[in-house]
Amino acid sequence: MFSTEVDLDIEAWEMQIKILFKFALYLLIVTSLTGCPQQKGEDGSGKEKSKRSAEASSGGGALSVKKKSRYPVDDLAATAVVIKVNGQPITQADYRKWFKLRDRIYRAMQRLSPTEKNDKTAAFARDSRQHVLFELIRRELMRQEAERLGVVVDEKRIRRLEKEFMEAIHRPKEPFSSIGKYFEEPWGTALRESIFKDARESATLEKSTTNNLVSVTDEEVDRYIKYIKEWNKEAEAKNKVQREKALKAKHDILNGGYFYAITTNRADLAKEDGLDWQTVELGEFQADEPLAKWLMTAKPGDISDPIDMEDGLAIVGLKAAYMGDAPPDSPPAMQYELVRCTFYAYDKYDEPEDRAEFARDVVKERRKVALEALGKRLWDSAKIEFPYGVKIFKPRAKKKVKKANKPVGASATNGVEKTKSLVTPKEKKKDAPVEKQQAGAF
Image 1 (cartoon, rainbow, N blue to C red):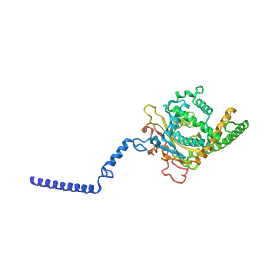
Image 2 (cartoon, rainbow, N blue to C red):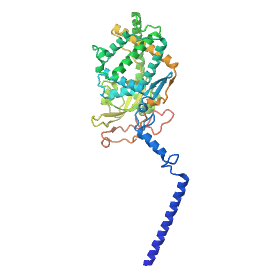
Image 3 (cartoon, rainbow, N blue to C red):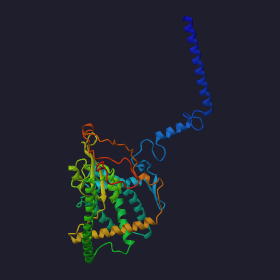
Image 4 (cartoon, rainbow, N blue to C red):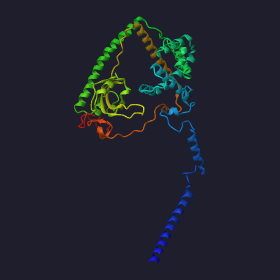
């Protein structure tokens, strides 16, 4: 019995040795044929990997690999040329300087400190990205045109713009020389450069056209006032028709129509907003704005009457309302998931009460139109290049997080309140969907 067990153990041991030997031989053959790409570079020395590691740790190259910014342009070196206008380079530093100065000017006009942050400053910063891009190109085109025309900027024009700027930042009684109290360096110098460029643009504009861009006559004022009254009358009639269309869409949704389908078939703008528009907070709107007023009393499943919005007239559906996450130093805020069906709306002009003020507004509008026309003419004939592409001025795409389709009760989701009528179509078809659905309004 004892000798038999020893013989069995020896046989098992020998079998394991044979298996290990075969496996070692297999690894030796594979290594000799393929090398070790995990550890070595192209020359087999391991230097390539070390080189890449060194570049990554030192931030080598145009784009840093340490941490990506929201906008790729912010990751470029300050000397990187991001735009070329007729061969004239505009660097990343030029872009950043104008972007930051623009933000400083906005804060001064809104009576905000340079470091204060709120929904308005965040929205302004987002919108500024595209504005800065086009303003830099326009200013360079105007500089080149001024040089071609031999424009000379007089001090009187600069002083006038400086005075207007002090009025805009609510310091009308202070001289421009005191600007250092509100714009420390380098922003004080950058502001003076910006005002000089505005003065140069103004002089270039006047020299490039035969139109009167300085004053208007009484007859012209009368003609503009008459035009405004006629326009407002026509706009009111058209908006009445659009409002009736919006009310009809709401009526059909409440009587069994499907919000997304009706939006796809009838909306004038942003038809995709009928399925999923956005999640908003009340803080993003002024308290007296129509949408904010409606959200204060609306409940999930409600559909608004036509609301005047920036891009048109819309009926809005509230899909869900819940208490959103907030930073540690801020109170939580209610968030609202919305859909909307938007129709064209026609703006109405304010009728003037002061003829002199209105005359100044007419001159400003005339200059604005003339400047846009000149800018377009210069742009159309210019050679504009983006060495890194235009996508560097746009935000990086965020990763989309899938949302659960199943409605969840309030007790299970930290105050989330959803309506059971809120259902999305199982499939998106290329053809316009059928408006009547048994699923419900949303």
